[in-house]
Length: 214
Image (cartoon, rainbow, N blue to C red; front, side, top):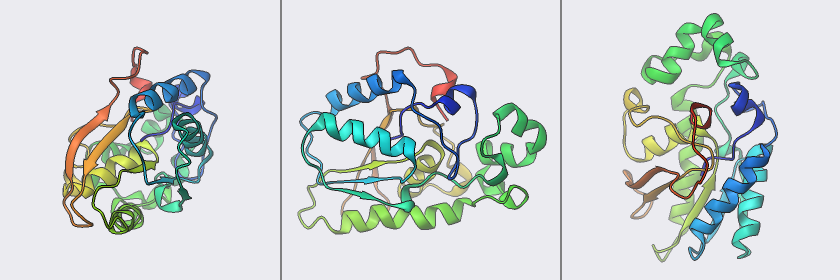
């Protein structure tokens, strides 16, 4: 799941691994709607990014689900470290770091974050994948549902990596919407996983706009 929409999402600012802003009031209603959609699905465990926007999202969702789901907060689920781009508006980033921005959004295999002191796609995948693979490996029944609450850019890279997608093609399906859920099926901790649903928002009643998806 991608976290609920924040003030910086609305303003078109990069938040990244170190920046953060509060969830918008409307986001809580969307999280409630997601909880209604997931009602009846038992989750064996929930893994959550330590960033406040993800924590607030997970706490609201888990309270609604009301199943005493065990949780683990892990830096493995944190958003991309976007270095100097964090806190900047997309329009300002486009002027100051056009090469980095284009590669990050459209050509991941060309993305070199040296100038912005950020994190590479391989480094992100290296820290995120083990969280999922270890969680799946702990499921001795092969039947458990696991929940991961994280961030848009990071989740796109993670999910595509779990599907076996090359870095060059990681943006081929676009981005993820706030309060969306993407469902994968795993047969043990072996890659690739199988995609069941991508960026599902069918339960949201709000008309979506471009600031909802990254």
